[in-house]
Amino acid sequence: MRYLSFQDLQAKLGNRGRTTIYRDVELGRLPKPTKIGSRLYWSEADVDAAIASLAG
Image: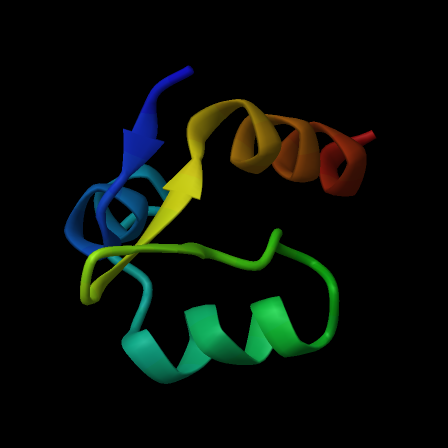
């Protein structure tokens, strides 16, 4: 399983803003991040699934 940092997630979503990404997480459009150490990471498979469900 590959994890995306915030910068990786931002690039994957077309350089969306920080506030917009966190709003999408709160609204359930994007999966919640996992905390590893002191940083947040998103599962790439979960992000891809969320994108596919929104597009379909």
